[in-house]
Image 1 (cartoon, rainbow, N blue to C red):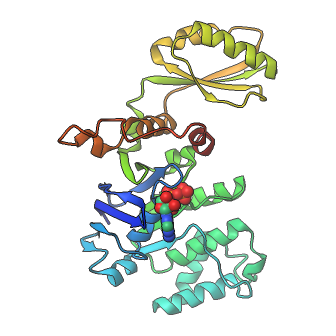
Image 2: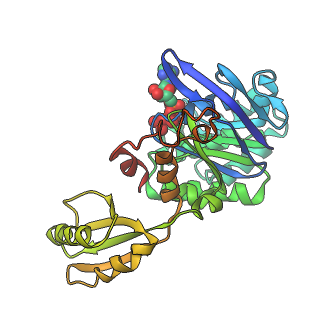
Image 3: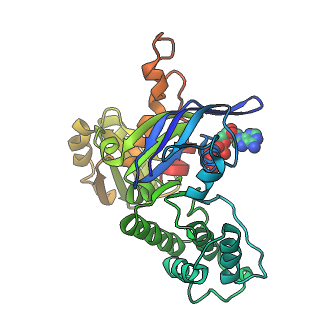
Length: 337
Ligand SMILES: Nc1ncnc2c1ncn2[C@@H]1O[C@H](COP(=O)(O)OP(=O)(O)OP(=O)(O)O)[C@@H](O)[C@H]1O
């Protein structure tokens, strides 16, 4: 089911949370909404699932306007909010049974078994939710969202706070949903590697504005830089190597800034990559890895490059880059994992 977002505005008092982004979410895609903290992702999701009303613009879900046909749209959209909680004394199965009753689902027992199996909670279904781990709680929330077989699934930071096993389990479920159903999955995340592996399309928001959207493949293909990760022999070797590289390689950008570690991550123009690698043949270096620009580079380019509205501004007042600014160390720290 296709979703079309057109010139959507939302403000909270003086804060403009969404400043007119427009983009399409293709039917059946797994779509990532990316952005810096406060970019407007959760606000957008709140509007998309009909929990809140926009101050301007429209969101169309499969031909229905969210504002005009709120109830019918909500039937089409399963939602896993960023924070969800269930009464701890109920078992997982009882939680789902309550949700199914509220939704008026037929064949409810059968469907409950199906979603329990899909999210890997069959064995834990009769345990009280108070004993569930964080990851199990998230999977139960996903099961509840999936119960009515919605054609659209919206997941707000679904893996935030999960341990690596929980993250992997969640990824497997989302991949399965993507492969085995026509569901349009819309998710937000700060972990770019996660979005790159799960999603086929993305939108990048910053300060409530759209900075890029399209297929992951097309966004990643436009990079002209390479990233080099270097493990040095110790932190002082790291400092010496960095000093040497900065002297010898033009326009070197340091991606990983932690001076107390022996790891160094730098980015440079593709044309300088040979120079860079030549200087890594040194006894300061344990090993290194050269990476093609991925979604991480596309994200930084988009955030630093200005919004799409700036590019198309007819009066020329809003020049590319004028309104956008990188938020110093905060961006690599948040998204560069
Ligand atoms: N209920 C609210 N009242 C006031 N301001 C709000 C409210 N909800 C969001 N905002 C503000 O709107 C902006 C967008 O917030 P939002 O939560 O949508 O961003 P986000 O991209 O989801 O951020 P994060 O990645 O940190 O979760 C922020 O400046 C935030 O402080």
